[in-house]
Image 1 (cartoon, rainbow, N blue to C red):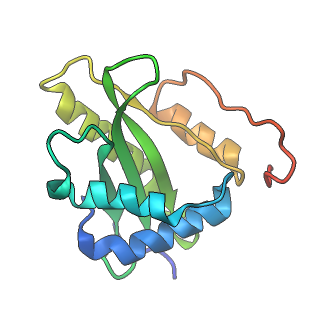
Image 2: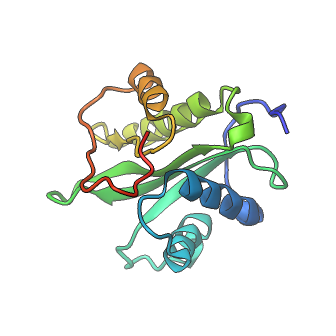
Image 3: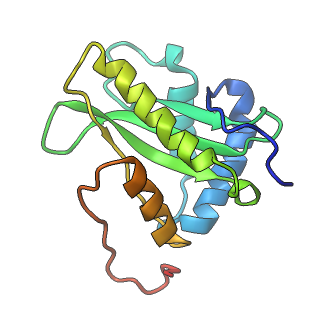
Length: 171
């Protein structure tokens, strides 16, 4: 199926969950470096899709999910988590997933998902001017084109390396 959906990101709802699982499994099949824990993935999905169920005193991850397409056939997803880096208590927005379904990659969905993450960051920056977004590319398929896309949209501040690389399905 070729994408006919406009590259417009909307907030995910619980109705999107079956298709979110479909996309997350596809992303893992394509780029997963470690075994997928469906229990852990569900933990994150529950927290970002049902934030009202997270107790106020709970300091675990929170976040948002943006999707492209109808609940019956999602074409892209970005999951962003509010979390500090290991050496700080300052919260930033960090991506867990940014994925476009393979048959929809000739669209502008990937750019739209990055723009969505920047828009959400800018919304938070209205009340917290020092707030930052940190995203990255961890991929074993078409890595360089993805990195070039990110370089056009964001400031590059590093790289990721893997050892040992045996069995990692590297390009």
